[in-house]
Image (cartoon, rainbow, N blue to C red):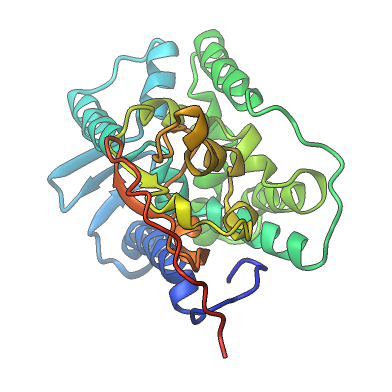
Length: 292
């Protein structure tokens, strides 16, 4: 599915390259976890919360591990190793890469946003982005009080996995609630304003090396396509429009999920992936050729 923005001088595939790669990544991760229960081919055992790959590589969601610690449950050594591996990975490539390249709920919320944009469905509430950090704190406090890993009881990511395996039930009701919330209540409300998993990984990847760079920002023609497709459009302005204020061209906000949609839709090729230490090339604007 593509965002509801007009195509200009490039084809449909070129304007959705990173989106298609993300979908392949998200579905690929989901398939790996479902392959064992559904086909008996156990490449990965477990879920996104805790897994063992090929019987050797442990991976543990560090957010889940943190809840376990708050719940006064002593983690096993393999869990600590698995969490350390993921923490190091997301600290390097960007914590919210998890949201755009791994999390299956992102497919649900993107579908909701596409429908909302297509039919111009009005929204009635746009909570503050800080709310997800408050929810993050409350889940840890609740774990400490109850002695349980509280978020996993209602986590739509885990429930979606269970729903695929076991069919209709409470799991699908929670996933549907997320879909309807984004469709009728708040623009990209779940991922951008409520989800504590995204809040946690945003903190993890705050100083990540991999970033989107508005390297050719001088070539921007103010078409606004990048703002239309970006899940967190507020992250674009400092890098794209902040040259006169001394802002670098790299998007440094931890809210950026490195989804690549701004790269996809920009016909002036303003954006690219680079490191956090890159600078704008400030290339001179080139004549914009429209499609015949």
